[in-house]
Length: 155
Image (tube, rainbow, N blue to C red):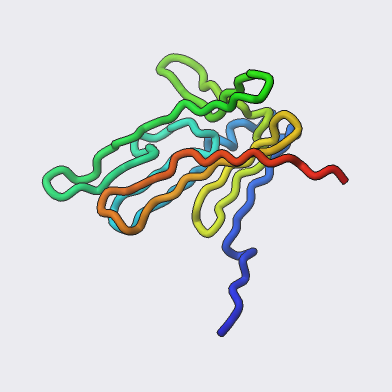
C-alpha cells in the first residue's frame, strides 16, 4: 500500500503585514466545502460574501424546494483575557466600502484535505477557525467556528 503524501493534500496561502496593500486578494480567493449530497458552504478567504451563492450553510432540500440558504453570515470576534475584543472576518454593505476586520492578525489560510482553515496571531499566541460539512446527513451540517488558542513556543 502506498503512503499518502500529505503535502499534496494541504494548500497554503501565507499572509503577513507585507501583504497589507493587497487586501483585494482576500476578496478574490474563494473556498468551497460540500457534503456530497448537494449542500455546501462557500465564501471568500476574507469572510466577506461577494456572490449571491456564498453562505455558511446551504442545504439541498427535496423538490420543489431545491437549495436553500440557512446560514448566511456570522459575526466573529475574540475576547482576550484583558477583555479586549477583536473582530474577525468582514462585511460589505450596499453603497459602502467593504470592512475587513482583523486583517492585521491574519497569518494564514489553508485547505487541509479540502477543508478551509484560517490562522490568526493575536496577543502573543495564535488561534484558528475552520469550516466543515457532514457527509452523513441530507441537510448539510457545518461547524462554523472552532477556536483553539495556542501559546507560541519561545525559541
